[in-house]
Length: 283
Ligand code: G3H
Ligand code: ZN
Image (tube, rainbow, N blue to C red):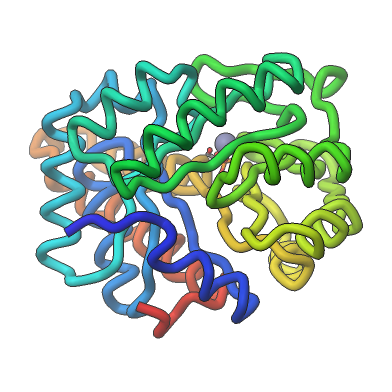
């Protein structure tokens, strides 16, 4: 069965490793991620954005994630990514999600606390874990787009108060990463992660994990990032593999002929991330 993030995040924080959130966009993503995690014996999180949910449909999303958990025997959380309202979060929980993110980062600080608290109270009553977000993460993800000028770093004192008042299971704070592949140089503010993590019992979440150099990921985990989200790198691997097949052979018509290499390419990406995050053999 699907599990809440509290099944593995406390161990991640204590053992200084991170559990990967790999976004699910279709069946091939789900299979690639699960196969990789099975070979690495790693727990993981299926992230599903509202856009992906619309694309796959609620029933298929939950059924695919349940099939992945049942067939692999791994601790897998099915997690709403960047949930925009209490209603969406409740709809997902009712349908079988084991974890939700409420992203109230575009509200005022006080309003973000108030709204996140409501989600936490309802979700925890049903054994579902909750991720909150503070500060504004730059870049583009589905319909959410934040330009660099509006990407604001999280303030440590606010992050600590946010945790104390909401009781979230993990906290995404803006520390310099951005959604999507990076164009310029990445600068992660490890000091912010350290300062916050020292004062709260739950791990920090690093969004925008794609395109971040391995060494920075290692440092972020050492600083206290216990959950790292990756989506774009899998999308790129998938599309590049498909493009390669189609460019080589204009007569191909069987989708399995290009989806199989796409799935293999994503599996390799996920395996590498799992090893980098240190979550191998933690299932
Ligand atoms: O919420 C999802 C992640 O933050 C994905 O970011 O597409 O840059 O890997 P990414
Ligand atoms: Zn994100």
